Image (cartoon, rainbow, N blue to C red; front, top):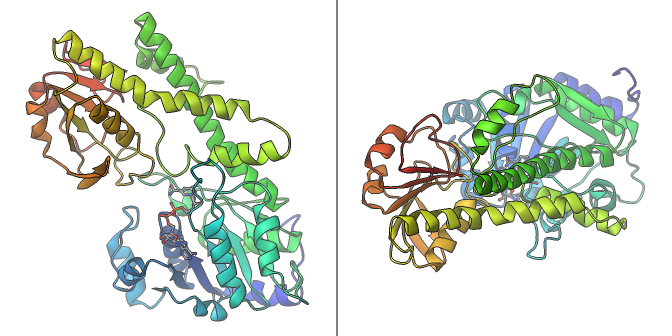
Length: 441
Ligand SMILES: NC(=O)c1ccc[n+]([C@@H]2O[C@H](COP(=O)([O-])OP(=O)(O)OC[C@H]3O[C@@H](n4cnc5c(N)ncnc54)[C@H](O)[C@@H]3O)[C@@H](O)[C@H]2O)c1
């Protein structure tokens, strides 16, 4: 037993024994950026793991030992598949033979900015169809506080089965940071909260087999709120620093120098950086799960709404900068050729979800600009319904203006400064480089 945790008896003791012996059969539902690295960690820890995904091309690739997630090396995946420790399927009936299930399906927002629970509901219904006593189910998808108890638990509860005695249900927020070479699934501390103390203890026991640090909390709601606090904290601080960037621009102050100098304070300050707008599946989305839920509790999440508004203005701010730079050079944006460097939502990854590059390009296109882009990770994108293929970095030489949206390490920045006519740098990628061609955010 973990200090302060529950004693595992009966069904719990049996499942606990299988987890300790690593003979428990582990299932991961949703094999994306979160699910695939998690499946690999448990397979590496010696468990037999099966991934379940509706997307048959992903399950086929896993079975063939080919990774489609940059943080999961193909060599590592294929060796686990060859050893028979990891497989994947789109057939949910495998759940019948599983002891544990982690749900890692998407949780997007609807157009109205309300939570879209449909993926969690559909995965939970699939589990319910093949559910059996003695299972541990852990929801990992980011969601509003109350989801595990109010949405998942009723779907899994069948007559005669009691949570915490006959089966176990937890929430554990996923904190993976794609592209981060230092912190990955294994060494990012894992928070877990169960519906009952026995559920929490089962979740703690499970994760501690494969991950370095587990942090049990007293309930599923606390665990759900932890994730929303973390991402709301980032979103609001980015909003603050974006507003500061707009102020500094008006006052002729270099915001990047201000942040770097402030970051020398050894306590009480943490640097956040401005940019062309929020991107990715988490920071622009998750805080709205919290504001939606808090509205139901009668509280307006005013910080979230304000930061959402400021961050949403950043693509317009960048486009205005491009327009001003071109005007100063005697060229109207209409008809000008603008080359975008980097379109993924952040550095050194291939993920385009919610990328601000798409907003910037759409706005520029609507002002009549001709567009091209380079991104070593993204071979083609769709802007305003049209396919655009990536161009080589040298295409920057032909453009009237280059705008850096994503500061991939692989770009040849020295070459860019040499060949470009004008550069709007929204990421301070050209830090330390003095040239009249460069206009910083
Ligand atoms: N990507 C990140 O960096 C990150 C970080 C922390 C938390 N999260 C959260 O983790 C969750 C998953 O995110 P992701 O980035 O891995 O998403 P993803 O889109 O990369 O992967 C989700 C997978 O789930 C599959 N899927 C959808 N519905 C399904 C169903 N009913 N049954 C089986 N498979 C289904 C999809 O085909 C897809 O392969 C989200 O809630 C997200 O907010 C993501």
